[in-house]
Image 1 (tube, rainbow over the protein chains, first blue to last red):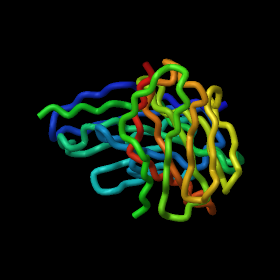
Image 2 (image 1 turned 135 degrees about the horizontal axis):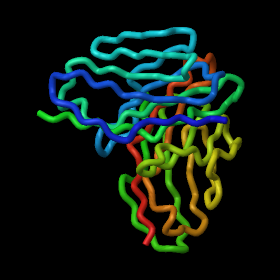
Image 3 (image 1 turned 180 degrees about the horizontal axis):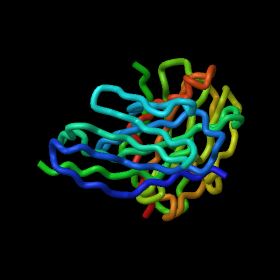
Length: 113
Length: 115
């Protein structure tokens, strides 16, 4: 079945690195995504990784995928107050045709000045 | 940039009312989706549509229906609103095609309160 889990809250100090973790259960996931939701807004795609990759880096963002453990993480280097938001991981499942993504419950990142 | 517009940012309705939530996208996307977002539960899929007049149930369709008469517009209907439908409702769209295009584009959400 499809199940994506995240911790609900993370607090870091400005300038530190943040690591947001996610676990998923479906081994046939094809793509895994990180979305960001700022207060009062919809979700915006931050980055995504194909399931045959281990790592993807995009400026301050590093995505690590451990397919054996079904574990995905998002590292934000030099975290800024503007990074305060809710971060959702999501998976797409091969063979679900037109189905949309399955989302985790979201991790609220609070950045302390 | 893709724009997904939800007609209302905040909505307050009474129990038993019929409620329409409207969503419009401007990128000719085939696929449109309605999610609800609740604290600690993340996003749950209510309904989606992959073409005009086509719809499929998501994970929590009970108490909802949808309408897709035109490609750009996808409406969510609460036939008889109940207090447990108080939530943030998010509309999303995406193009059809290869798996790499499964990126969803979201509207800014409608916070519905049912009293």
